[in-house]
Amino acid sequence: MGCAWSSSSSPSRRQRRAQGYEEPAVLAAETSFTVSEVEALYELYNKLSYSIFKDGLIHKEEFRLALFRTSERANLFADRVFHLFDLKRNGVIEFGEFVRSLSIFHPKALVSDKAAFAFKLYDLRGTGYIEKEELREMVVALLDESDLCLSDSAVDEIVDNTFSQADTNGDGRLDPREWEEFVKKNPTSLRNMSLPYLQDITTTFPSFATHSEVNDCGGVDK
Image (cartoon, rainbow, N blue to C red):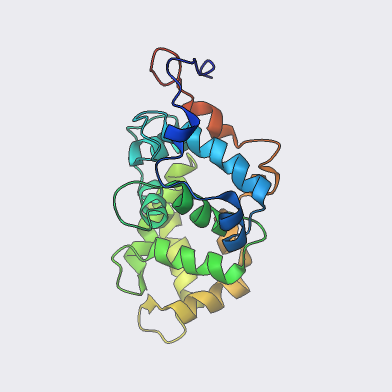
């Protein structure tokens, strides 16, 4: 862990709130979070958004640092999640975007919202359909993100089994309706879309929050 912020290196509260800050009450009304949970997420957001660039915005490198403890490790899953969190498509995640997008991962969020987010996650080409190769790429990325390794044949079996159940019209791709029906019958397919710690965010941060604290020398502890 990094050491505590010093008075000389820590940005003021006003400076921290200059970049995309929105009132907790507003965000709580639009998401699955309470006001106190949004306030706790703000502290987490600050840890991440000042970990490398110190500008109060989460850049892709800081996002990777939060997930992998290194800003250099590229991963399709992390990059896709970052892209979907970046609602303004300007290459950074502001606080409001962070809370609204993270709300989808709250255990109390609607399953339909989780399914829709997951569909966008797998629709790599943005065509409105999930192709077999797209699903395969994301399965490999999810395994990599979890430091798991399966043989090519095992990955192909996962993809083939999914399509055999979900591709009801047999056109070789999944549309939103087919995907929604599939996840209703296979709720475990959305297990990565719920983060239990978000229900207890007011008392404990997720483990990755401690990986990105900035020390007094301006470096990042890993």
